[in-house]
Image (cartoon, rainbow, N blue to C red; front, side, top):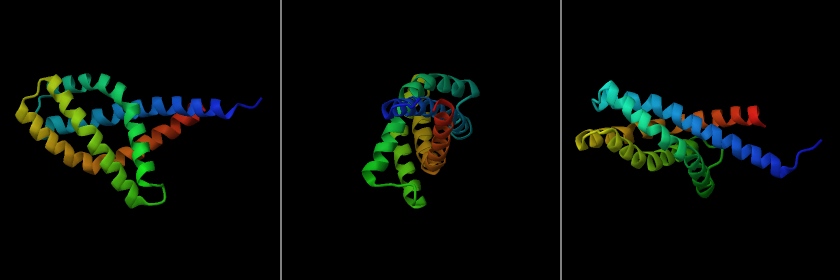
Length: 150
């Protein structure tokens, strides 16, 4: 029995949905707790509160970020053959998409404006360095999801 191309595309979309959300939750939890605690001076419990508050945000934004990244790559002509373009594209996508969301999460968690300013600036620097590693992690999660669901 053969599966129609439409069904294959649907499975791929579902795979990307699951992978994008899982990648966002896992990566941002680890990265942001380090920034919040060791750079901005949030207590462990404030950071846990921020990460709990971020779960719904990650659930809602995981796939839109993946779509944003895919669209940005397509628009800018970024293909898989240029490591420099991949680095620049992932860096741009991660910073532009994540920093405004991060500010909202910190506000919701009760961080002060000073903590938000320090953390957002620090996050921008860190996100600049972690955009490509996140892109690699996202692609890895997508490959696994496609294998498991496809």
